[in-house]
Image (cartoon, rainbow, N blue to C red; front, side, top):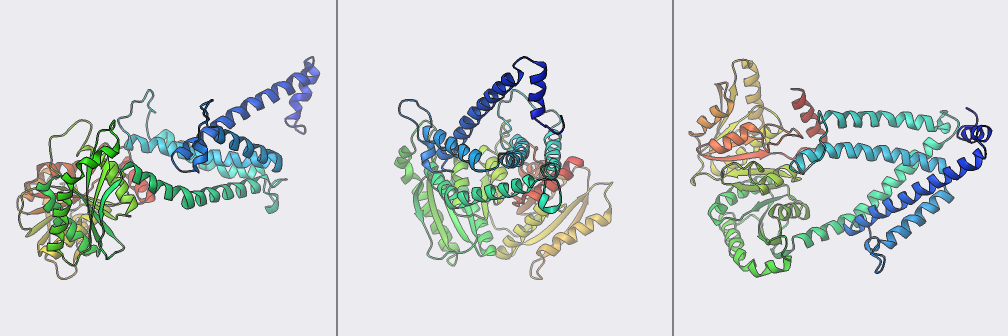
Length: 495
């Protein structure tokens, strides 16, 4: 039985069941055809969806006029599968498929974790218990399974096993993924830009003749707070030696064609013209661009602008209205903060006036360091003094407070800024910071948590300070890489 492998089952069936060999071969062929049929249709539907989303050429999205099926996607999938089955060793093809399936399952588990944050309000008929641990365990086991699978398949060229199916599988997986990257960067990514432009078309774009490597985006909607947001945007753009992008969005209902929004462009043109004029008067050396987009969703239009223009920092406004159960800071702000691929500043619009003093609460971490950098950029332009504040609970080590303050000070103290440090003892961190904001014109505070499953946007303390402060508040969130975010998330979960 061991020597015969799968054929042993057929031999056994021939000895114990009348016509067993014929019956088993017929059943095996029927099952194989059924699986092949399902594979052809599933792969064709995936390629059809990718063609519709412009990730593959448009021939894949064509629908047959009579049968209403993606006939080209089905035909090309069937031909491709047939060629692979005939031209390549089927065991090695199956082995490479096994490896790619494991990688696919890793992505599925990771997506399960991510969607709890990116789409927390989706109706779900089943919720995974003890999330995120089951999918994390699944990812760990799948990664652990890969070397054992390759070892079992064989790497005869390296003295492992009696075949090179594992080596072929690794090579085929690498070639397949390389082809995927080539298709993505050569075809899909440019088409994604076209799709973003189609989703939120640009109806007005005034570009400065000078281009710089970095870009700061300031979306504006309300003329009353445009000046305050632009002041922050100007300070950050000057500090980063970046271009300043000013944009506004003409929104139309989802059931209304985007073309209908052109009738309302003139209403927003004045807002953009005033904003560009203000920047040119205030900072004549700063390149400024103005853009008007049409879209069904403001956040989608902002996301598309971030991606198309390679924005490094976005400055958004928040008027601190009453809390809703479905959004923390507001639907558009929440979406951009959580999903924007750039640094984000959200400014709680406070009393207008000159900025002479800036409060920076800090407890360490990349977001707190980013908040200190923002405060330093504004202080360089306004001449304001900076107070670094650490709220120490009775259980905290006093030396730890001094270490964190000196670390924050080292980030921004260039010998020209006026920087002081203060330690306040209190069990109520947010309330202590709110009380301190009364002595300052501006408070800049970094995000306090990066939990993938948190329903908070910046964290409990920054959002409490943003709602209760007596002065203007800027909440800062640095765009972290995947590894940094996962490390911080695991630390938060462990805590």
